Image 1: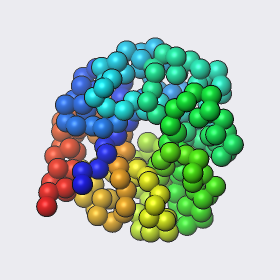
Image 2: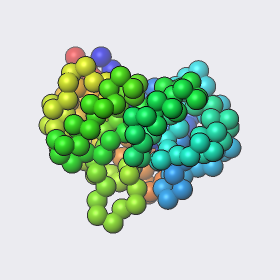
Image 3: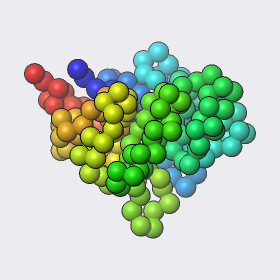
Length: 216
């Protein structure tokens, strides 16, 4: 079965259109000001309109305030809220109740203990995303282009629905799919020519690689 593919950190109409043309099931906009992929909510709203009905629009946040979420939900009208910070299970429940949107909860992974934290969110978060812990000195919780040990995913119960992120690219996406139970792949830096600059050729090459990996 073909996995969901989320192209994250989009900032231009050209990149959004190419991702959609190639079959992205999700497109992500990042609302974390320290990220080179940060986008203003009103600009993201215009880009999200291009994807409406073609792919799920994901608003990626890091420990957002209620005011942050009010603005993002109003201007972007996302289909999914992605929480990439230290949000507690109680905070996730509150956000779901207030906005009536599904939540994808992201976790940074280095070892088995990081995966044990997921248990408290099962039945609360609608989906999970697993990324590598940021390297020393990085202020970004994701999008650092580094992978973690994907064999750790076998610590998870098979019923946990998740996307895999962190260092995925055209060279290793087949391994990512065959070595884990990920139902989706999230990619950002792997289709860039520079931080925050999406490369249309790399987007094409990535989708080509996914297609080859999914051939019988």
